[in-house]
Length: 361
Image (cartoon, rainbow, N blue to C red):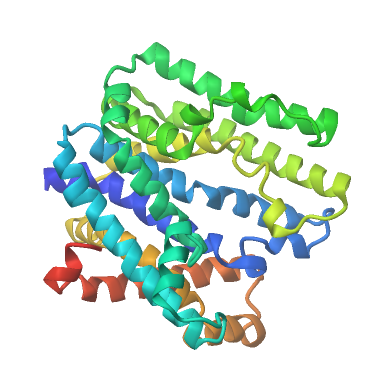
């Protein structure tokens, strides 16, 4: 039971992250729903708030990776022959599945091994699989990240947070307010290597898991942390709205410039809060095991969730809830994402009963 409790916060964070990954791919029915409302409506701001909050998905996964992998001293052989090999096999296998699927659905006009290899190499088969490519890069960098994380003092971690706040929060806002995005600081001083997803978030996850004393946290600390995080999200909302007013157009591909400016601090709030609650609240053993089971299936959910989202079953559910029951448009995608998460969990749970598949997903 103690081991279950030690894992519980990790699995809960995984489930939350998986839910938001699904939400990220709901398009203008969920993630980009705010674009269908007028700026002066409350629905615009609620929908935009949810859109920004959903961007915690991948950073949370990277934080979990840091918490689980940076403490252990893996050999290069283990990293390459077990961990990287596993992800590479998964990437190639599921990319092949989606490559053939696009051809059968008439989305792609060619079906050849050469074209598949090129597209796999370039990462053009499935947009959402960028995470797998980034994860492979993280695993390759693991020995260096471990050395950096283990030698990180409290003062240096605060310095890291400060650097992130300067480059990821202050500068983007100032640059757009002053020059509407036409002028930006020279790329040579941006510290991209330090502030990228596969460095910043794993190190933060490691620090919060092993260096941060959660027992010293009190309710008022959690409340203050969330007040600041929500304020940060609201500032992100304002900057997104401001950009829309300045430019006059806001396609989905360009709408996310300010979604991540407070993301690190929001993710820290989520991580600390979940760990704090798991430490303070006694969870029923059956519920605990269900959470751990669902958490262990989130990788599989990530791999197949777009297929479920695009299925006739879910499409019919969208129609019934929207046009039949007339569920609120903001609440609707959240319900759909929960259903997709549940279906993905059940499918992955069954697939993991097969030994060969279990070792990969």
